[in-house]
Image 1 (cartoon, one colour):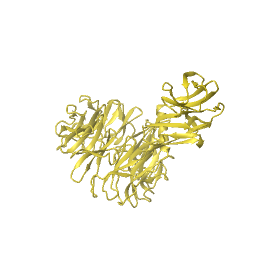
Image 2: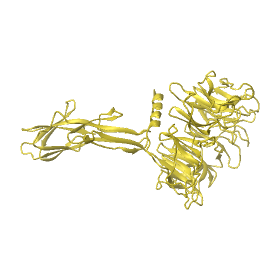
Image 3: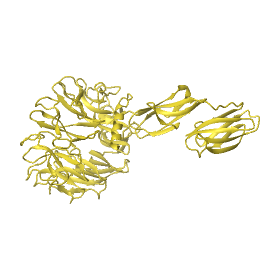
Image 4: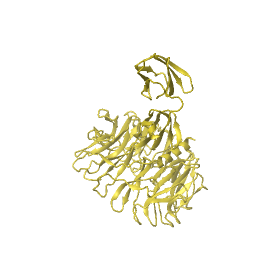
Length: 619
């Protein structure tokens, strides 16, 4: 049920209406047209951290998305990777000294903890936060002895996990490593210990528990190639490997040597279905059945999209997008993003070039989203990220170079996203990063400001109205971010009473003070009122209760009283006596209602002449 609810929420996100919003430059860090060229965008403590060039040097900055909220954290601090680890920001720096730096987000709290260590080239993701530690492919600053390292953000807690290839050689290939993949309380990766070639390994976080999974290709030959990334699906680990007989094919493992075996020999013989490109497996959660997506190459179909239900018999070509032996998936393998029941990815056919495609796991549901660069030329969509109910990505238009695009999954809903002023034809947006579901940042060179940090700030909207319009007023509607507290209050006009809040004609609350947490979708709520009927105030005296709705105190104003003072009683809507009041005379009388919970109440006012009934609301 939990999985169904989260998937349903994704659908609500995807179909939510959007308000138009234009990208804006956060701050011109390198003025006069110079390139600030912000890099290493990283979210930490509800801020975006990055390094940028101010015209003389690179510095560490943080921003909340506003110019005033963009400040320098540390002078001359520049690296190639930043990672948030609990309450620390880990920075792999080149300058002012090569090593690992740690920051709490302040200048005073930013310092180096470990010298002469750097992270591998970030062609793939060279790190993984796991069990409150950061595992990474590290090497000394002036060498290429790349191995698996670990840090908890302290000097004492930073060390090489294991010298897999003993000595100065690299156990981890600097340019062809696999991403860390978590499975069954271990991390999996590829490494070479000098005697077995490059194979799949695992670690439980200890040196002793860092071991080769299996010598898939016996001897010093490589059983795993470069940039082969694994994933967990259906309780097993899926990855690519070459045993020397079948070529590079899909394999599966339960984490043991005996339980590691060839999953399917897609192309019989030594020419494997994954020999010539990067293999990525994507686990797709779905209702009612999940499935696995990957790319595979056959002589008849080329590199195409395949699907598996976790069994060899249930693994087959999903669709021959580029008919015949020509490939539709490129050398970099399957690249895209799963969102709202569908997977968006880059593919090409004979008519449209490399464009944005989408699949729901069926042949009929695997279709071109839009031919952005019309004809056989390719827009080559890349850098996919989900933000505010749509997929954002970069693509090349036929006339304006690489631009920022977004899509709702339809051709009509796929559009270029541009700032108000753009003079450059190729702004080349990169490093798309979302700050805790609120704002999306990226680097671009749109105009005379040079290459700087840009932000797209689109709140979710809580729209409110009254029905009938004369029945009352509402407060609290407007723009909110995911996780914000929303407090709506409905106040009836004279002679009206509040009934309920509804959404899409369905009741959601009978409390005029309706509070909830903003999700990732827009909401339209109606406060419903009705004319007061039945009990009426027919007194000659002018009596008013305010504020209404009220909290803690209620003012009872009596005007023109000539007879005896009033006494009062407060009842719940079901007739239960809750409070008695005495000596309500001319003027304003303050009644303590702090003990009453939110809801609707009646006050009965009596003297020797009249019985008067009033309704009020506590929020």
